[in-house]
Amino acid sequence: MTTISIEVNGTVHELDVASRLLLADLLRDRLGLTGTKIGCAMGACGACTVLVDDAPVRACLMFAVQASGCSVRTVEDLVQDDGDLDPLQRALREHHGLQCGYCTPGMLMAIVPLLESGRPLEPDAVREGIAGNLCRCTGYDTIVDAVVEASRA
Amino acid sequence: MKPSAFEYLAPETCEQALGALAEHGDDAAVLAGGQSLIPMMNLRIAAPRVLIDVMRTPELRGIRNEGDRIELGAGVRMAQAEQQSRVPLLQSALRHVGHPAIRNCGTVCGSVAHADPAAEVPAVLLALDGEVVLGSVRGERVLAADEFFRSYYTTAREPDELVIAVRIPAGTPRVAFHEVTPRLGGSTGEFATAGVAAAAEPDDGGRWRRVRIALLGVADRPVRAREAEALLTGAEPTADAFAAAAESAAAAVDPPSDIHAGSEYRRRLVSVLTARALAELAA
Image (cartoon, rainbow over all chains, first blue to last red; front, side, top):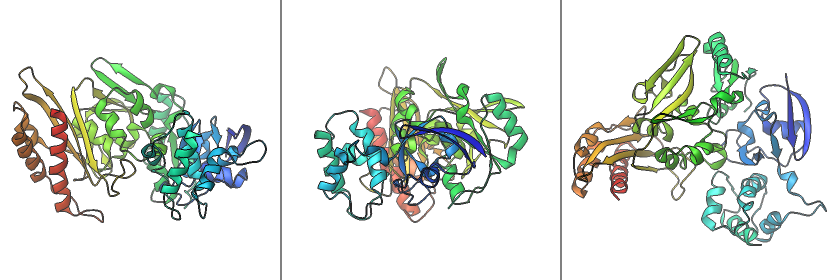
């Protein structure tokens, strides 16, 4: 067991973890943050994308011990103080950018850094940003439409 | 889909990392960005008993100018190199590696050490006559990229050695990188079906010298198209010269067939991509 210190959504946790525990499993099983999904567990689908020190990474391709000392943000952090969805989430819903919703948390966390510049996004920039995230329900056009609109709001 | 148990070591100095490798050697794997190693561990294709995490070692993290060379340490992530390395061919090739989330973790040296024959970074290193710095408790040695890559996922690295850094000559004026991936329309995301990394330096009279053409995805390792390079060296950059060089590059390879492409198709890609790269060098 290794003791790690990790900040998740603004809260610092000191935890003893097995070295083989993946960050995705730490978030879901130890911290109860089940918004982060595990699709393939081999880095192909992007469902487990979270922000580590503000950069999107695959939580299934990082051991929890590697994230020690880092700041992690998950989809749970997007919800507003009043419990409402954030503008990006609302745009996704309005554009029917999700159906089963399994890819959505990973999509959102891949997109969040794209929106941080505050500049309007072109569809191609959105497509490149979510190129590593697979959706098997809606296809991608409605997701791209939603993000483009959110970037212009 | 969960990795086997392992002992995790996080050395804080390069010396400690080399000591751990000397002690655990064959039983150990070096963990850098983990973007190739961890999928293999999750699938239990790899089950190292010890992981030596070199990302906790500040001295391995830098991008340094070493005379006429740029040195990228073992801890330099691809996203960092993409923005800061000042090696244009590497920077344009990195945009084709995985996805942004992969490049935020994966390292330049890790890709070199992994030696996937379809990977972009090894081909860039080969095209630019780069070097691999290997360290162990026995000492340091520097190998040319040409000597380092041996076969599929196989390099000249000994089990107790760490790829401490790669060194790339600075200041190649003209470079071009082109690849084709199975998924059309996407610039990122998958290993290349085939690709070309090329560099050249025109002399004052407009003739080309130091022409380098490296191919990826068409052999058991990245390979140089030496005959094509020779055809262009000292030549004027004309469409006819490019066509002859592209055909020569294609004729020199015997690519593998797989689910994505047959050997003949890959050979055709070599010709087309080489011609595109040369046209870009001339532009």
